[in-house]
Length: 103
Image (cartoon, rainbow, N blue to C red; front, side, top):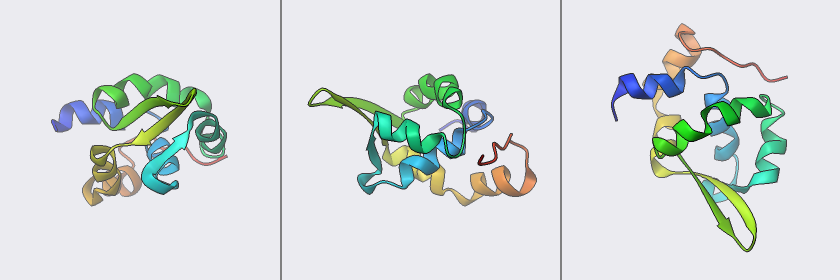
């Protein structure tokens, strides 16, 4: 994945909060309403709306429908980005990326 393009997504407020919330669930998959509820503990709802399309475009998340319910899933690529130590160090230690603090 091209780092310059990935940086545009990483630089958005709430990026790691979204990946973190998805990582809390079994199979990295959660019903949309429950996801929004949990996300609001860390970030606001708009943070997801701002970068949802970019996360889908980069195939970091997947939104699918099953039995009339929508689910949001962290893909394998999304998990590798979330678990990447270099990206985490940039995000947390150098504070190059905007950090949205839990409320």
